[in-house]
Length: 359
Ligand SMILES: Cc1ncc(COP(=O)(O)O)c(C=O)c1O
Image (cartoon, rainbow, N blue to C red; front, side):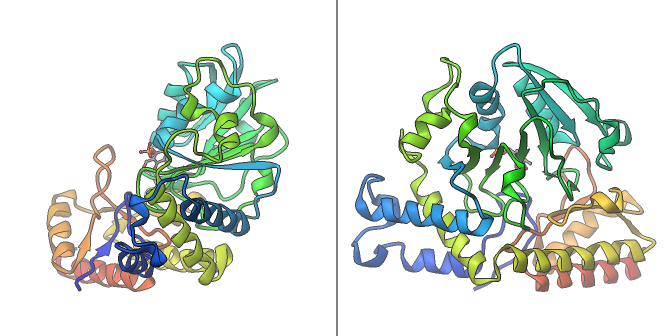
């Protein structure tokens, strides 16, 4: 079998042992004579799979009973609308910290449903840092404060989170389960699954129960947190196979030291790559060191004319999906939980070779 070094930003690499187990269980899940894909979501066997996945996620993140954990569809993009529809009314204000492309998309969508205030933005410096919290222009009486904990395109990551103001909402699509977080600091955490959780098509929402229950009448039923919580996320057919695979990923994280163990490995991978970039005169990382993401590492070559050649040679060595997002150019290595240290070592070694040859 020929597995690549997969640096995709998402959908992204999944743990090989998870894929192998899913393959083994594909035709006959635990003697049921069917694939999980073929089961009714109402069947006892699937309801058990679903409940176990939720229990494992709660255990991994220490999520208390004060929170609903929902397994929904519609992606993080669905939640850009779902959050204001569920948690605000048209005259309420959502404050946003704008740290990149995904913040901007969330701001634009929320603006259709409520008042939005961009309390701080790093747009002027091409999103290379997190604005100093002392400079944030927060709205008195804001209903929510929204952050994107990790900007997947720009590679900017919050290392700690504000507390004490309006309930904090975090788009954790690209760094959920990469490190421990104190869930009690948040009103709501949401994430598309396709980086650290599982395949695309599943969206996880962790929301404080007391914030739910007054969704606007026009809220689509499948996005209504109270209705979905009441129905155990099955008010309509949930993404059953993604939910099952997410459950296997949660077990894999548990078996690999939980979030503390995963965080240590992620930090070591990121350190290796950033140190290699910083030590070279050929590569550079645009993000301020204190805000550098451990998940998405953007970098540029001293001569962008060499980008295509760099990517070509990387692919020859089995390294894929290193091209930066079309909006920013350059390179980006996404090194999510399932990307091994061996893959990062292979990348660093190739980068050094390339620099020696062409730099
Ligand atoms: C940080 C972040 N937020 C939101 C999204 C949008 O997610 P989706 O495509 O699941 O709607 C992405 C997509 O990759 C993302 O990286």
